[in-house]
Amino acid sequence: MLPPAWFLLSLITAAALHWLVPGPRLLASPYTLVGVLFIVGGLVLIIAPARAFDGAKTAINPFGQPTVFLVEGWYRLTRNPMYLGMVLATFGVVVLLGTATSLLAPIGLLLVLDRRFVRHEEGTLRSTFGTSYDAYCRRVRRWV
Image (cartoon, rainbow, N blue to C red; front, side):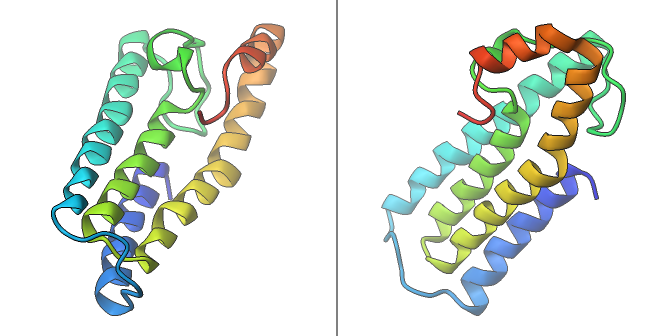
């Protein structure tokens, strides 16, 4: 499964946990509407970098071979803006739902993305771009 599928699964998991085992209420309405800001911000972090990949004509598939090393735009702030966007959007859904157990979804997504995709991509980028990638890693954090 690629990251978009994991993202969709995390959204479904958050909703399922909310309805099946909601646990304590963390937020009440109208404060839950703050979740919309996280969702919109997360979607921006997914879409804008994806367009940058498309514009640079480089692989967006985490198991593909990159041809260009992107360091501009959102990549100046985080090495993984699309993954961060997925986690933020899922967290936004959790805030909208307002229940504690649904918090497991963005935490699980973060762990899957980090262990299954980020570590692999870092190895590929390091072997492809060498010391310039190492210098970038010293300047820019993995997540935030």
